[in-house]
Image 1 (tube, protein in one colour):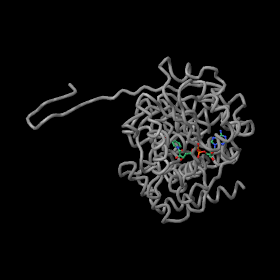
Image 2: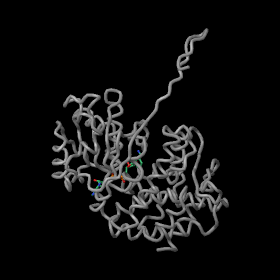
Image 3: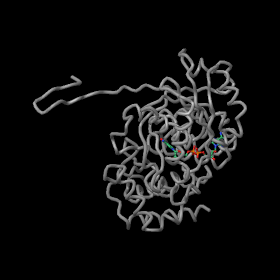
Image 4: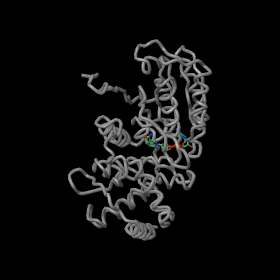
Amino acid sequence: MPLHEHSEGWTITAEQSVTYEVRVHPRILDVPQPSAVMDDGRLPPRRLAVVDAQVWALYGDRIDAWLARFDAPYRVLTVTAGETRKTRASVDEIQRMAIDMGLSRRDELVGIGGGFTIDLVGLAASELRCGTPYTLIPTTVVGLVDASVGPKRVINQLGRKNLLGTYHPARLIVLDTTFLGTLDARGLAAGLAEVKKVGEMVDPGLVNLLDRHGADLITSAFTHPASTEVVQRAVRSHLEHFAEDLRERELRRWPSYGHTVSPALEMETRGAVLHGEAVNICSLLSSVLAARRGHVDAEYPTRMARLSRRLRLPLHHELLHEPAFLEQALGGVILTRGGQQHWPVPSTDPLGHAFIEDATPGELVAASEHLRALARELT
Ligand SMILES: NC(=O)c1ccc[n+]([C@@H]2O[C@H](COP(=O)([O-])OP(=O)(O)OC[C@H]3O[C@@H](n4cnc5c(N)ncnc54)[C@H](O)[C@@H]3O)[C@@H](O)[C@H]2O)c1
């Protein structure tokens, strides 16, 4: 019973069901009648399109023509990506324009860009009139395989990465890999770190695919035939996880692999180390921890470091040798994980992963040394 009256007052037990769509659609900008894909027969709402500035520079004419084909009023706001701008002020700017154009809860925001744009648009929408719908067209690998398909929308605050946020998934996410054709090799590689994360945690076949075709995915900007399977497998594993636990009630989560010291690394370097690069460095550090504790064989970190090299990903960062940095990095993430380390590591057990709860400063320093030596050996 949702409402229970008792001697001391009332107890409410309510459930919220959430449905959202992830659709694969090649060349979404070329669709003659976009409302047929985006609006499911509803009256076309008004839209505020929030577009990554670089994407607007490359695709602005086509995006503008696409928006015009909805036959409904729209406005466009461009946002310049960067960790130092993933802030309250950037969310405010989106909300100001939405309010200025009189957007109601039957209208919507649409985000077109990478993880940066996705986080800003989703958080702005979640707060706007206590919840306005939004749709997403991710344009980076991180955006496609990870950020857009999940429910979490976060911004940085007080120098801490992703400190403020909410769970408010997009109504519809359209995956169109043709946008990846204009990403540079570094951006493509950074995205593959999130794919490698999925492979190491829950889908060993994905690691094999990256071993065989990862380099081709970068040189072909995801037009290589393996692209479809790689994207689908990474998206499906993420969705399987979210479908089980949309609001991350379980704080021991495999998608946090590579996200233990990486948030502090991104913030400390003010975004000079890209999100995916930081994730890869932290994944490798985690794999060394795992090997030293016997969760995986001793050669596992070397195999992953070799794969990282092929994927043009960095193996190490000197900040990992500063005890104060490691302590602060771990301290921040422990609070997000409810007071525990819940540090995901690869494992040979049937789940494919395990969690470390008692990593010590000395162990981290030793693991960093091990990783630095490995990185030197492979250069
Ligand atoms: N909320 C989540 O679940 C979640 C998950 C993963 C990552 N993230 C967040 O996502 C952010 C990283 O996302 P990202 O890696 O997509 O980076 P990004 O959004 O910062 O984009 C990276 C760069 O690529 C450019 N760009 C975007 N699309 C392009 C295209 N098609 N062609 C050419 N250039 C293009 C952007 O202008 C930017 O310079 C981080 O802030 C991270 O915290 C969030």
